[in-house]
Length: 172
Image (cartoon, rainbow, N blue to C red):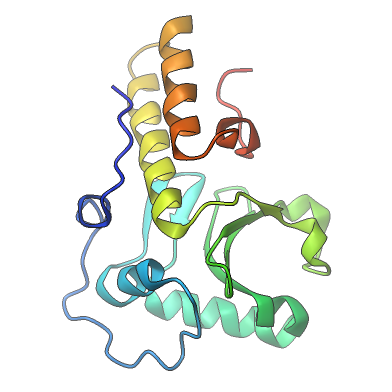
């Protein structure tokens, strides 16, 4: 229970594949080779209700909107997904780190509004799949205190402190 998957192949193979890969990468000015692998070979999908990844076409469309309305943010960040509540997941174009934006802050005005999780896209997928596993278990039972601690330990195994930084709390 709650094993962190770190292999890019094992993580990506859990996601739905595109019928044929995207070959033209010029519209994807990003530093993350793992994200580029995902966006060109895999479909957008909901991993959990709070982590919905955009596929190639939707990512281009959504980022065009961000670029036109918020060019400063659009030049720094790339919108990769959303949550069921209207929040957004971004990838820093230069560092490849994942950032979270809470929609209650209003518009994408300043970089300081975003929460940098300090994890790569592959670590984000590892975390997302842990939360998917958690949700699957919670559908059938409540977790004991030790199981909750095991989950927290697994998430923090991706990066120390990540569990407390994740924007949604399952156990309060």
